[in-house]
Image (cartoon, rainbow, N blue to C red):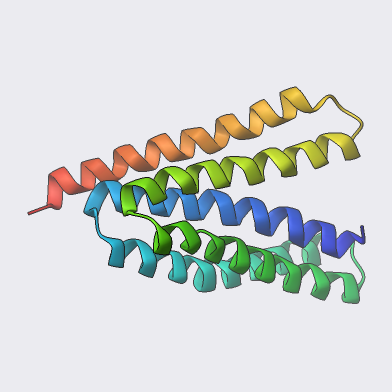
Length: 159
């Protein structure tokens, strides 16, 4: 895969899963509000998608390892991957009761991380089990911490 596409796709999808899952789990734990969760997901898709794209752009520009065309491809693919990945979490949220949608979203996110990790392991000619376990562990820490933070916010500032 071309360097710019690979950079944007791997970063955008991973960030899309981690930030969107954290947001969904945290907002659900803190508010139990469908409106807050939907608004948060859409906000993450746009604002964090643009932020990540600019971050990749500036980072890769500073490294000076990509051509100008590859740099812009990485920027665009990062935004598109983050935006679409984040919006994909709206499917269960719009179709299922919120409590169930959160669990389905966690499953969806873990599946995407597993597939990305498998691809990374293969490209580096490593055994996939440890790479997958490492990446899933990080994702699960995010889920647990954001759930606890959402509960804390609700207990401190809730009605």
